Amino acid sequence: MRLSACSVALFFAIACGGSDSTPTSTNGSNKTYDVFTLESAFSPSFLGVAAGDTVVFHITPGAMGDGHDVTFAATAGAPANVNVTLSGNVSRIFRTRGDFHYECKVHPGMIGEIQVQ
Image (cartoon, rainbow, N blue to C red):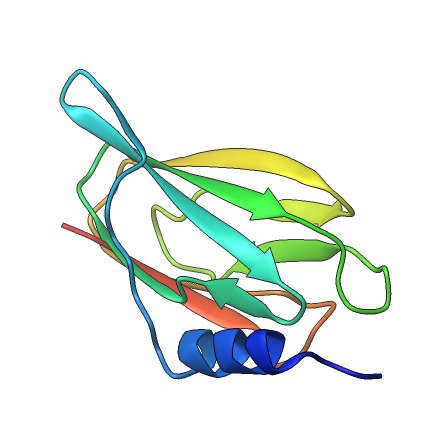
């Protein structure tokens, strides 16, 4: 598989912990944030939000054309997992304060965290 220099640079920028926690929209006092799947990484991989905010997972096919899932660690207050999806947007509202770790079971090592304050 050949990757362009731009793809490689983007991958390393994301893999090294880049975090953009700027909301894409607001609905009253609650905000909406975006997390994207990039082949085998979540971007951003860390996100800080407030209780009641929404995170939209933008899922696109992986490098092999496979889907992604979002499986949260068994933590009280974690939202429902996102089943394996090939392409689409799935929203989750984070109502409980805490640190919510998640992973893509399809791609080992594809992890993220949402910290709710």
